[in-house]
Length: 289
Image (cartoon, rainbow, N blue to C red; front, side, top):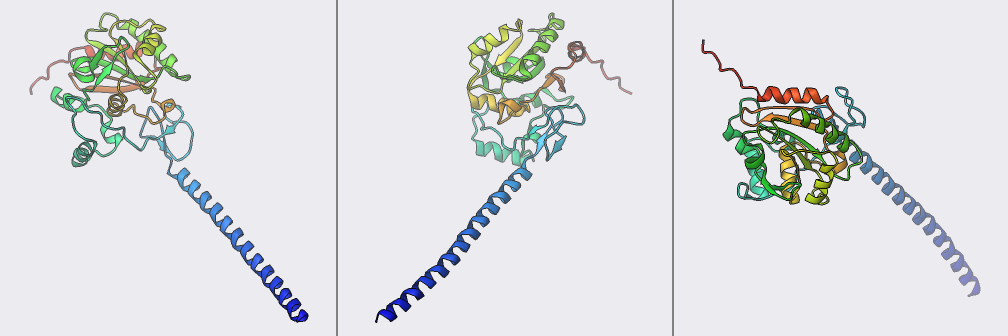
């Protein structure tokens, strides 16, 4: 009986050892497979990232680097649009807005983030530009299109007050531009700096920021409800998920004539002012043949 037990015990130990080896190999293989799966997912995610130039959105790359056209560092390209805010002129749901964009073939930010082209009618501008209520640095509510853009030559850029990069140099450069436009600023010309961080940038913070650069009447620093600000940014091509990756482009345009252009906000102030002056100049009437 004792011999049988010993033999059975040895057999049991042998089987237990074999089972442990098999289970160990299985666990090892499972761990290796999980690690390989995570690595594959990471590679796939990295491959899905696209970088673009803030100044030249048509320049894209799968790798970090600089734009060959202007030398600016490429930023991560945003793939999502902000939620659609609602107001008197845009009281439609996100679903309805998306359906309308799909009907016109405009289903992505690049297709809807550029102002109307040269020669656009006022009706075209009114239907394109958002009219959401934003708040100025003086805590005054304004409608983006009706109160600021309509009938004006506008200079528009994007900033945030806690920015440690290009925001202050851009604003300082544009402060020099305003000195060249003094006789027009606040009348035919408006300057607009939109915060890409409205949750932080209260009117008070924007006013403190603006006062550092001795801005004059006619230059508006805008914040407001996040959904309103995001939609205005989206339509103007300035919406980003990461505020630090915001565009350093300056948009210049004449709402009445539909002429719009982009320059770098750090361009020579006299050249920027010259571009604005040209947009102010009356266009000669076309001579019929």
